[in-house]
Length: 111
Length: 425
Image (cartoon, rainbow over all chains, first blue to last red; front, side, top):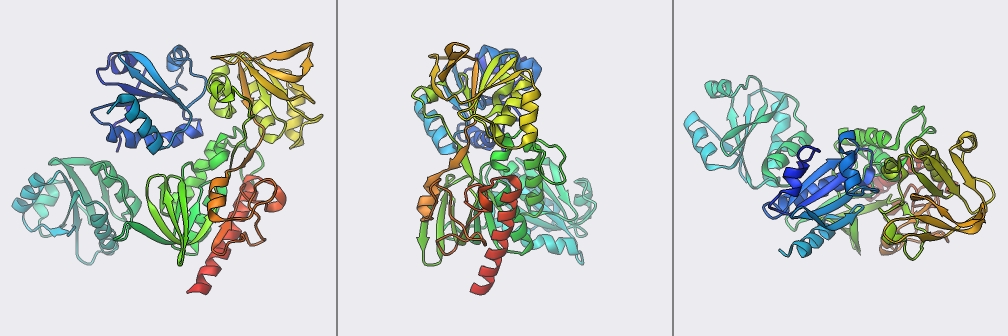
C-alpha cells in the first residue's frame, strides 16, 4: 500500500508549491533502474510519514513534465527534492535505502 | 489469529462492523481448489494479525453470497471499514495474489512465515537478484529447494544496458525489458523474495544468520552470493559534488537530460561503447575519452562508433580532473586535445567498469583474487563451506562477465547446492 501521489504539470503547483505539509518529490522515469528500486522505499515511507510529509512523484519521461524537470535542474535520476513552503530545502540524489532516507527526513523535518 | 466460521447474515453484519479489515472466503464442500486454498488461507491469518479472517459455507448462506456477487467457490472478498473492495479472488487462488491484496488492504507488509523468534528459516538464501541470482532461483525452485532471494533490483546491473544483442533468443532487447522478463519468470514460480539488501552476516552452528536492510532476519543452511559489482568511480576530489550536476554513472538513466548537449564518456569497454552509442542518439556531440590506444570489447559496437560522426574517441588520454563548481563545465585531460587540457562538456558519463563490493565478501570470509573477485571452483563453491558464489562477483567463467555467463554460473550453483542439501538430509 502506498500514499505516494502521482503528480502532473497541472497539479504540481497545488500539490507541491502550495502544500501546507512539506513535500518530498521524486523525479523519476520508467527507464531508470535505480528509480524502480526507489519506488517501494517511497511507498513504505509514505505510510510511515503519513500526516507529517507528503511524498509525490513526477515522471520526467512525460514530455509535458520536461519543463518542470528543467526548472528544477534535473540531470540525474532518481532525484528527490524536499519542498517546504514552495521552496526546495534539501536534495537527495540517487538511490537511498529506507532506513537511511527515513533518518535523514526525520532530521530535516525535525520530527 | 483464528479463522471464524460465519453462520448467519446477522453474524456477518456484526463482524463487518467490528473489524476495520475483513476477509471472507466463500467455500464449498468437495471443491479441490477450496481445499488447496485452505492451508494458504490459514497461513495468511498468521501473517496478517490486523485482518479478520472468516469463512462462509457458500451453499449455507446463498442469499448473502448472491448479494455480494459471489457465484463460485472459492471466492475471497475483502472489506475495509465495512466497505467491500473492488479486488476479489476466485478459482485457483495463488498465495502471491492473496498476499498482494492483503498488503494493499491492511497497509502491513507480509512478514512471511516468520517463526516465533522472528527469524525466518530456510535452506538456501540467494543474495542478489540479477541474472545469476534469478537463474539460480529458477533452478532451485524446480529442484523444490526451500529458498529465499534477497535483492533490491531485479536484473541488477543489466537494467542500465540500453541494448542487449548477445543474449540467445533476444535479437535486440533493452536491459530493463530482459530484467522484467526474468523477474516475471521467477515470480511465476512463487520464489519467496525480500526487496532489500543483506547488511549483516553471522556464521553459526547451523549455517548463517543474515540480516536485511529492512531488519528481517534469515537463518539459512546455505548462501549463494550473487551480489554483482558496483560502478567504479574516477576518485577525483570534487566528483561526488558534481554527481547529478553533470556527472553520471548511468547513461540510460540520465542521457535524456543531455538532449542536444555535449557530453563525454569515460572508458573504452563494451559498457562505455554502448553508452556512447546511446548518448549519440540524444546529444549533439559525444567525446569518448579512453586511456588506451584502441577500444576493447565487441567489434560490432566499435565499428558502429567509428561510423558514427557524432562520436569522437580521444585515445591515450585520462580524465584527471573535473571543472565546474555547482555544475560540470568540463573534464581535465592528461594530454591536451586540440590544444586544450579542458574539454568543455555539459555531462560526463563515467563508464570505467565495476568492481565487487567487499563488505559482504569480507563478512562471509570469502577468498578473493587481486581484483577483489570471489574465487570459485568449477561447481561455484568458495573457500567457505555452505557458501557459493555466482555471476559478476566471481572470478569464474574465465573472468568473462556477461549476462549469459552469470546465468550459467547461477544454474551450476543451484544444482550443486541441491546436491549438497540432499547429502545433508
